[in-house]
Length: 118
Image 1 (tube, rainbow, N blue to C red):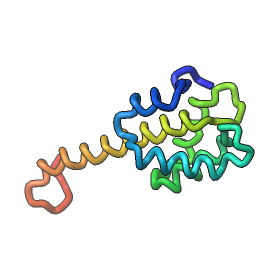
Image 2 (cartoon, one colour):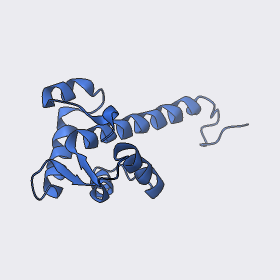
Image 3 (tube, rainbow, N blue to C red):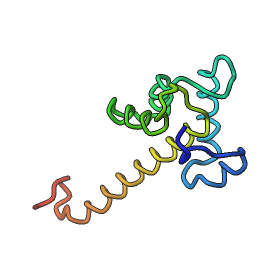
């Protein structure tokens, strides 16, 4: 697993997340655990997309494949809970960025019709 995603200790993980709150972490853990059938702390990378979609992130197939390639460069086809939490954190950050961009562009929509002049 990529060392950028290798984190030790649950308390340490909770301190490193900026946007992933306790409630969302609980949701991620609940869904992760439901896919971790053998309770070894890992799920198949093929199940990652399902979890992200359940959490309303809806990554494209390309985005999902890029995530899997990044977090599983050795192609073990497995990810742990910390990795899933890091990906959810990133998706939360991406969502906020888009919302911020939309808000910023609204100031250029003088007649409030949802369009801006270029």
